[in-house]
Image (cartoon, protein in one colour):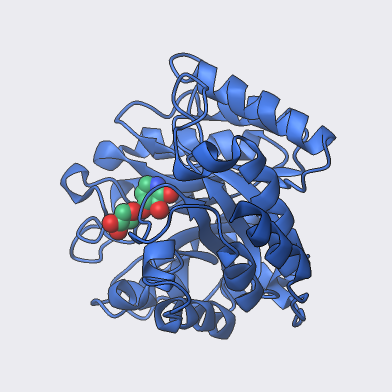
Length: 337
Ligand code: XIL
């Protein structure tokens, strides 16, 4: 079965790329996504504009059709953020709930929203052990099918997600059981064929410091270094950064260690911090500022009510769509005031 899958991947036709305006010319792109006046009581200052003024590519957030329809969410995204990640709509269980039966509507909505509103699109995620449909028992060609569908639209793809345990060993996933670590090569090569322009990322959590998270940071960096040397097309490492209160101080040092693997870029891909203390957010974002190849930060949720960790109130806007002190503190830091 695996061999026939590999054959199918190799034979699949190349996707035709469409122009990559936002992706190829970041400075131009960010100019189109920032500076929009907030139409509501939300913050009137774009954190994306402030962040990109520091030489970064984007400051983003997440969304899908459901959350974007809630209250002032879309207005906040339009006014404040320059990049968007689909929270769930591109995950396997959502996009192909039964074999070959692709449900594109949710992901198409988010991709269309990004294209129409000049937002950089981070695509998430082709292979992950979680949110899988029941029928999945081995690697299939869905990497090609899904990445091909959005070829030309994704700035980056999280090609594989959460493949390591905290001790740095490989997670015992269906992919690892079937192919060993070769599944990484299969997935990245398929994604590269399907979307030659997208930055291909390996994404994970517990990459937040060089203290307790050090084994995983080291395993990630050394494996990625080895895989790149072996010709696997890995462009970036994503650090999810789902943090506890007070847990942001080591983010920069860990990002630096990840960047030293030889990837061309790194990013904070899913930032949320319990309690959303201003100092914690400042420390995390400063961590990206301090690492030259860190291209951007994505906050994992617009409002606390929408957050997957809502009881932790971990994001930048409250349940009433109002910016929280951490948002203002970030703007102050980025604007040098
Ligand atoms: C979360 C979503 O926010 C939830 O809506 C969903 O029920 C579960 O997944 N790591 C990831 C993200 O890479 O895709 C997860 O998102 C959070 C953990």
